[in-house]
Image (tube, rainbow, N blue to C red; front, side):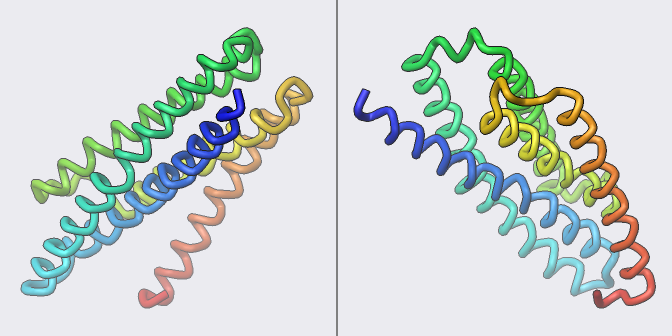
Length: 182
């Protein structure tokens, strides 16, 4: 198992790049929503460029990273099947399932934007973007703390993080409403 650390390293690299794509794609969605409110020809110029940027991000970074991250994760589980008997791994896999569902929903939203269908507000997308932050925090703490993870503190921590993120979004909205160039 001398190659175990190489597989683990590749898994972590693709976790990082997958999350990078998932953090950035809703930001591009926000820009697309806001560009949709601009007058012509600015609207068309911006939406054309944003469609290209989201397409490249989605198919060159996000999807390949998701697939490779999953591939190396499965390979690690094959090498270390005992992990599947541990409760922290069950919870982690639950969060990974949520991340995959989030990714698939982002894909659906991506396709809508490619067809110029704007169904969401920029404020919704800002909130939507924070789901990956919550999943990232949960997974990192689960993996690092494993059985030492105190569930009460963990649940309270995730709730506090969610509240702080929502307060941050509200504060940013107030600042933006006062100064549209912020």
